[in-house]
Length: 97
Length: 397
Image (cartoon, rainbow over all chains, first blue to last red; front, side):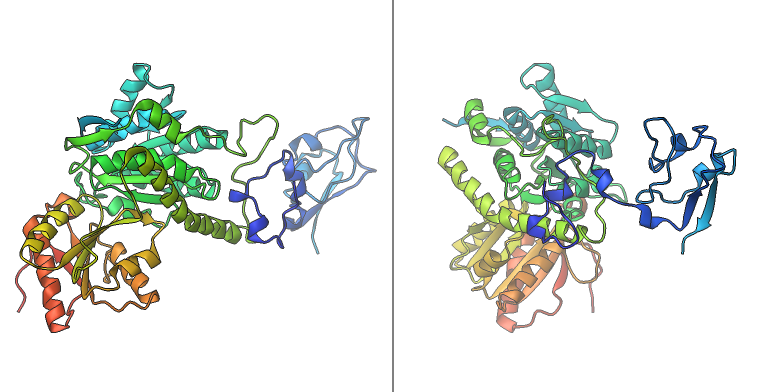
């Protein structure tokens, strides 16, 4: 499917805005909606696994060893649920600049 | 060979739906269109159709179910009236913007309140800007014929818009008249099968329908709808040509009745055109040059064609069976007069709001309209262009 963006003329857009492929939410980066950002303090993290299941945007990547990695800021909207959930203070919310 | 029958307008609509045999019918009963889903559910129960009949709990759900069925790749139909259409309103816009060619049989009735179950066009006028193709029908025959043509128009690749076929509640929906039906097989062949390019149940192409459409996209999608509506005009004429080949019955964007050499004319829609034709015949016998333009295609509005057809007249009266309550005039009047204006046709025009809430409009009232028009031709003075016909009112002065 051809890429449609804010420069695409109406003739090239799909009727009704239909998207002819699956899994396309990945293309829509919503991270810039964020006003506060979670900061991952890896030295405090015990890899308990409580934070990533509560993320509504799947913005906490987990590797093959089942260990969480740093935030994916392309999708994190800064809701702060992970920071509230963390029992070890390993996630700190900071104002976006 | 056409089959001679006698049917009410609702029976005619239900018969058309039986012959079309859509995949899904989702409907909720409301006077005066109740009989359409009622008859249709009998066809379902008797095995006369293969349709999945969804007995929904509201009109909002009826239109929602039709939207789901069409997005899935099926053909969906429904019927409603007045407040039923009002209740669908939100989904009416979703249907057209998702470009789903749903076909709706609208049996026109006054939108409450105060509560009234009788005929006027306030329901249809409430959705005139919703992006649906709107066909109006003078009688049961036209309601039937318009439905047979509906899918070919709506599902055309250049169109892909939902379509409603209007007829007057009770006046035609509950009046039994002679009708010519087409044979089931011929209708099936004429309507054809629906094979949408993209649909939800296609496992080879997973798609998303109706995603978030932010500032950078909605404008263009609306313009696409407008473009499709413009395309619909020619498609409606092409389908009418094919329909004429099958049935011998001829349809255009509107019907011109003794309009060519007329000096004054009435513009109206649906059953009032029948009354007006009788008056035209009577006045013609008296040597008065009167005519009628009966609009069939209200959306898309045939701007240039209407202006061309009315341009030679000395005065016109547009009859609106719904008041726009805008202190300016009815919707049809606005459309006709702006069509004339942009085409530089300067003809004195008046508007009559009439027949509200099922008020009978008699031949002598139509005759009065023609007499008023002749008076305007004589004096050159329109006075008040926004008038009422058949309204009780204390005499002025």
